[in-house]
Length: 292
Image 1 (spheres, rainbow, N blue to C red):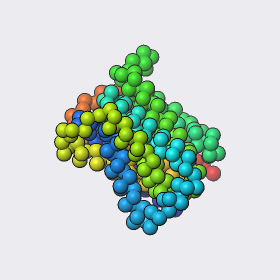
Image 2 (image 1 turned 90 degrees about the vertical axis):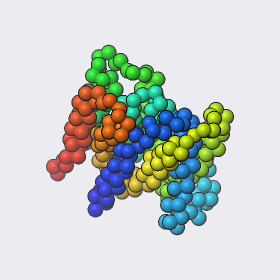
Image 3 (image 1 turned 120 degrees about the vertical axis):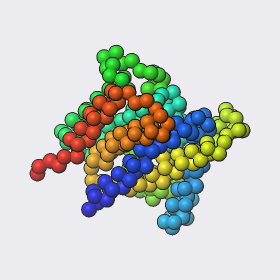
């Protein structure tokens, strides 16, 4: 029963996250990555506070922080501050159809790190699925020139891959956190706000941003950095095998490509589709039940 619920929460999160690559690109036409981080973080903090208030857990905020202040400060600096600063810059430098699959390879890293740090078992089919999925990501990133490893933007590719390490590391650190997950997330956003807002005031010009930019960044704050996290946390907490949930995110790039092509008119390279077939094949292998 728990695994069914975990997959349900995971799929809901994946469907919402499928829309955010398009929202990223739209927002980046009005804001720079630092402004985007600051504004979206404010929206996320407000949405998470509303969820905590609805759950009746908002009164736990101060006591939770006081028990482990440095721990929550570290989590907040990793996510959202450093992680999203790196990710948004990667999207700024790369087409979204390349940046998103690269970023989504964090699930492979998470599966391996969960075995090392959380003691979770990795089956042989998990290794096969991870290898096939990551090979698909490489095909997408190189546009089929695997041997040449010729990237559109080496810095953009490097930042996208760095984001996978930051994201997987964050979830590993958070996995053993016994506090209410929404309160933990909310603390991270609150503690990161002085850094993101301060950096944006120092480096960016906030004048002249139209309402379309504010609407787009609000969507990002709600459905990439805020409420969808709650769904994903629920899935990860309920899952008996993290690999089963983490590999669900390979569905998202395929849906995202359709949205990118139809909403913002981004051209999809043919090898992107080949890479996604490899990723989906890996997902299918991973989801197969082993015989007792």
